[in-house]
Amino acid sequence: MISSDNKNHWENVYETKNPDQVSWTQKKPQTSLDFIKSSGLGKDASIIDIGGGDSNLVDFLLEEGYENITVLDISAKSLEKAQERLGDAASKIKWIVTDITAFEPTESYDIWHDRAAFHFLTTPDQVSKYTNIAEKNVNHFMIIGTFSKNGPTKCSGLDIQQYDEESLTEKFEKSFKKLQCITEDHTTPFETVQNFVFCCFKTH
Image 1 (cartoon, rainbow, N blue to C red):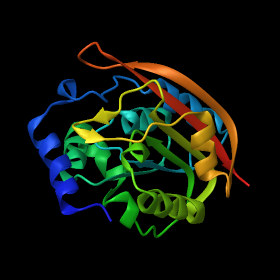
Image 2: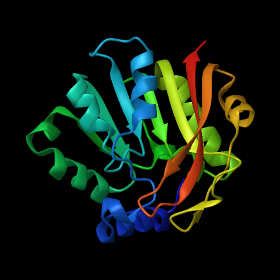
Image 3: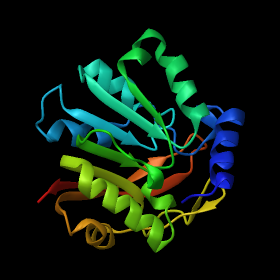
């Protein structure tokens, strides 16, 4: 279980910083959108964004006509910010405040999306909790983006676990088949560059 210190860390980040002050902000999460579209699933597909925070992904998914979206984050404040930004449209989204390793889904998901949450799990216990939850609750596709072996070793002052195509695939190989992996540079709002590896998997 991630400690309450961790929750406090993220609440503090979202209380005190605007999107242009945190490294993970993307104006348009194009890679994520491309992978979701390439799944070929309809607009009624159930999609969950793990560690979505106040990411703009949900805005673009709504714009594209997706109707069944859940956003999960450890920080209630991050989800409040997203809800404020979306206004009335926020009522179309399911919002879940929990630590991903303690998540007890009440439904399964056609697409599981995670950009930059999984790499914060740095112990074998945390990783196995995450993979177990995903294995039981993903119907079709999983899209995961983490810092690559050429990326940073920390984010927001916390240690992270770097991955490459091989090591990320290996973590999920029991229940998922790799479809495609790419690496990409993310330019932060402070004009620094972070290298990510993004993989799309399909359930066996």
